[in-house]
Length: 374
Image (cartoon, rainbow, N blue to C red; front, side):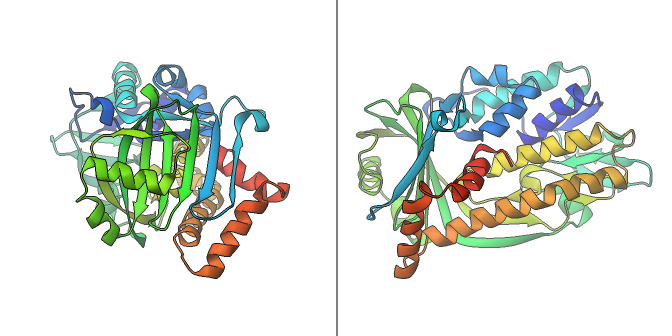
């Protein structure tokens, strides 16, 4: 999504000619109940609106109007809602299948965009004044700038030898969709448990998108449960705030690691989204950080005739550094604080949750980052 957003924004805002290379053709079958979802912050929603993309996404989106954060087995909890902050919403949940269809339609009909799919990059040649890419199909492309938006295992990074640092959290995420027996009222939840954080995001048709973080040992046990056992254990860990969990869809899991590309820019190459950094999902910041990468790159590219020259790319790098470092540090810190059973740490984090609502100077930065307004 980061790459498609960037391509359309560069066309519409900066009036640039763009070639998009996409490795995977669209699936003809919608996943239905099991459609995966992503949470967009209010800041991301506003940027998509600025790029003329939100109207086509919003029809299948579910707004987040309030957020509740709690720690299982302890008294403290906190949260906030859109009305308190004077906002229309805190964010929105979009199903990836619906978003994929919309983005492909927009890419294919944009006169400034050439869409190569399915295809992938097999070679890169960096010249002083331009850059060339060779595709698996044999097609050769050239331009002033190449943007890598090809995920944590970026082929572009591999070809130009741009390594990444890796912080392994020793956790896995289990993802699934849950059906409720009562309305979710557009509320999102983050609950910290002994097994790991549980996040539930509101979706269409009274479903919740679940992300449950856990150790590898717990994962092995979890994947052996039948669906009734899974729902019972999830209910035990989460509680009854949402009533009874009626149904769970297909489970999927993936390891949780922080990937940070050593360099955000290279000669006539920039990295955005998960190709630049991949975060732990604990605070839902990953895609939203990538959208801010996109917004910054669009802004600096629009100001330069040669959008691949060093001054343009250095401006992108310098403007992204503070937000990138702060967001990576915040998410990694939350993982370590809320995945720690050491008694003094448990006491400290519960005190922090308890006083959050009473200390405005703490609330501001946390809420602003949650809203994507940094």
